[in-house]
Image (cartoon, rainbow, N blue to C red; front, side, top):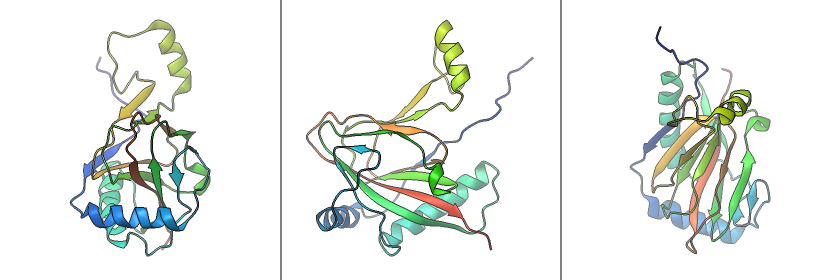
Length: 192
């Protein structure tokens, strides 16, 4: 009898064709304008939620991929919008604690990497905690989407990641002096 996957969590990723120099300059400008928030970040900089007109072209590009993602996973989405968007700048030993974006009421969350230095992976946590506890007791000969407790994704220049807002994740400490800049956001499906 074959094994069928049930209760899957989809992680969408792609590379965007967009001018990162303009986005990088805007991120640095915002970092100089606003003090850092302290939410999930430990060290580094996290901007407050930004005005709707910030990163207009990037947001439109992201929304195109949000429709592709929701279509791929079978969700009817007719009026997607990004209402929350903020920047993150992590330097040496900066990291982000495990968190999700459920409290925002968002359907999806995501991150776009403005710079691609090797500065700490984003790590997604398997939501099936009970299985993780049993599995860890018995071990495995290889890790797969079925049995992994964590899923690691390296930051890459122009990489876009989309995932359910309920999926817990964190960012590993940066091991470099260079600053890694990313833009995080929440996506809502507004009622028509």
